[in-house]
Length: 443
Image (cartoon, rainbow, N blue to C red; front, side, top):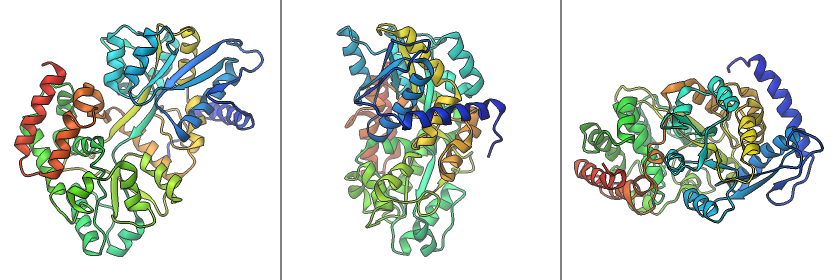
């Protein structure tokens, strides 16, 4: 565990006090009431985001802490998954939110190019510059202007497993990709197929590809492919698809085979490992698997639900692929000045530690005390994210135009589903991916 800095210890105490206050209060709907006094007393900040359920409730605790600190009333408005359409319609209707939590780099870039965003204030940018690895600033910057403050991160290089399955098969956590497949075949021989794969959700297949590609080809080519300055027909892409195809074609490794995987969505894939009737020993996806395993199936992290880092492929470095939500301020919001004050609050460790204590959260902020997280497994994941520093690469499909990297039944999602069904022609799949990328990127 990293030693907490003086600033971290101070903000931990502040966040703990703020959290105690908000947990003792009641809130109605999506609003938090103003505290008496405070520099923003009498003002309202409207925040839009995709979060629902426990994520939304925990983010409201962060907004409550902001209210306690500033006196501002806050309103959270669910945007639905299509943030771009939601925000565009709100701007057109003259009812734009002040702040939007944007889950995709491509959408943030679109907003900036539409002229919808305000640059970060000097205070927010300065704080972020000292607490975030430069890579996070890069992903929040468009054409040299810093717009997006990354507040919540996802660690998408974690392989989750049922410890009892590993014990029964006599296998341990693998240190290389080849060892992971070998361990998977041993699991299958002991009676439980290796991987539950959520092939119905095409985004999970892009994550498989991205981890293999980042480790095998390296960060420079990963960046080039993400920007489509490298063609999808490049030998490095064909090699990564060939590696992924070795997994997809092996019936010992894919629970139920390809067709069953194509009928399995993400929550069901977690259920196949941690549910009452387990059908697989492992499920690859992000740190959020742990939240499903504990919240829906009552598993205890670190005991009956564990993970190991996605292992290095062919002697490369172990990959760290991340996702994240960036806070941006809209020019057309009714109170964008107070909205920027919220971003200044979110840039500080105090805000992140509120949600860290509530669970289901990782912060890219290196000043957040690991002791703020509620369990050792999450602490380990958070530490891995921070330690990766600038070697982190953002989810490639989230950087792409939505037509290629974010549309159900189209683009990369659909072509990788087709490849899961029939992985016999990696070169042909690469050519189809390139054709779709050309249409989406326009180059």
